[in-house]
Length: 338
Figure 1 (cartoon, rainbow, N blue to C red):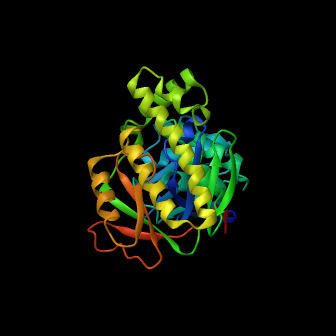
Figure 2: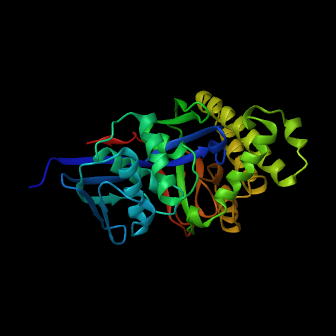
Figure 3: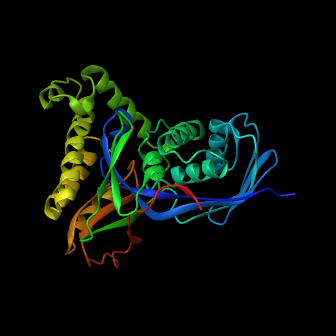
């Protein structure tokens, strides 16, 4: 006999500014969005079994989980990782339904992890929930991710972005003014973090931090003193991006649209030149979007190496007709049971 029915929803997220800073304790400013993943099913039994119209295959995970990395198909490893980290002992049979595009840089994996965790009985407490799901992602994918994605998707507040200090895992809400619109445009260049240089970029930033200390706080002069050019670029990105995050939050508070656009465009240049996580496809899409009337600025969003860009525009701007998938997104509430 089936047990109690559960339904859990978790949003995707878009990073307005502040990428490749979270894994060295930097500042980020993401926003939970109105694209989400829902897990619905009945609790009971000794296994988790989930099917999805958007994802291939069936996730079948026996409890307790022996080794999440051996589970197939690939997306089922995130389910297994969550079940393992939270110590799930009661199973779930149900479905996964998602509007967050996989491989698009909008945290489809974090949305899945959070929804699964809540459906399996994890407490709705943003920071511990985010920590558990970050650990699950690392277990499932082998990618050493920061906490930004999971914390933003867990703690999102409707109408707001989050300013997160990843060193302390503290955050505050920042109102997104109604005269700003946020658009996400899919470059059409998919990527998998486990097959990208993401882990190498993290190692390089951590190596720079090992030489200089906490990168968001080091002086520009100290950054430029690094002899290794690659480490110098990685450190410079973190240092300048954290400054941009602070300025961006202030500009949101005072509604300075022009400054917001300048900061977003500068962020993309830093991600392209210093972090080296952009691609020619992303760069061309940013240039094309920024040439459109009403666009304040655009940048890649997420880990890079493909995926999506985010554009800030004045109210009433239409970014359809560019030959790519373009969607206006709105700041959403975080992960929850419904």
